[in-house]
Length: 66
Length: 66
DNA sequence: TCCTAATGTAAAGCTAACTTTACGTAAAGG
DNA sequence: CCTTTACGTAAAGTTAGCTTTACATTAGGA
Image (cartoon, rainbow over all chains, first blue to last red; front, side):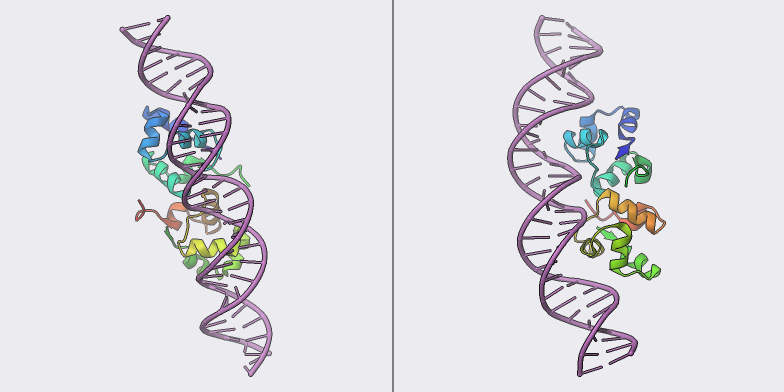
């Protein structure tokens, strides 16, 4: 699933490691989600949206999925 | 995770079976999510929100979670 | 009274989300 | 050069989301 996490992270000036700590997951998880390798859980999606001060819908692009 | 799926489903007059078909999961999945036994995937949360014409944030109550 | 519809529990199995560890690479600064 | 920082891949293990099947309970209608 496509998302704008990498872009929003860059704006904040955070490393993947920083973001991982902020939402309490491993760096691997951040990498995999940014790369679209797998979709975050609903809870993680929420934490990310909260952190970036946007909605889940603004963070993830659902439209291209089945 | 608490949610208002059961309430919104009742308003629409749908059974658990109806809803399961509409979002393409099993009835067990709907039961478990309504009961809060586990959290839906981000994709399923999105499908439910779309179906009920609301946001994911309106459908699920994240605030009480860790 | 009986049948069906709607909701619920239980259990076993599969897959995807997430973790941990280890290693590779490229850029920047001393 | 050498080290550090940031990003990336890979692989093995655990857990949670989801499926399928089977059965129990309750309420309503014929």
